[in-house]
Length: 86
View (cartoon, rainbow, N blue to C red):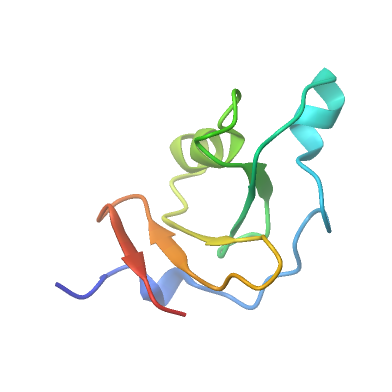
């Protein structure tokens, strides 16, 4: 089934080039980063202790993130729980 949330995707400027700002503020590390494709929030992935990207989705309702790792362009829709090809 095609993701019904693609209309929320915008051309965003990531809030951080290569770090999870919330983890940095806490003095913690992260595994990988995700960028919200509605507002540009950068947060750590679910393999990271703090899961800031998912926390952002739960707080904001913004449905789609994209990997913020070099060379990766895949996207994930939290609502539909599916990968989306960029």
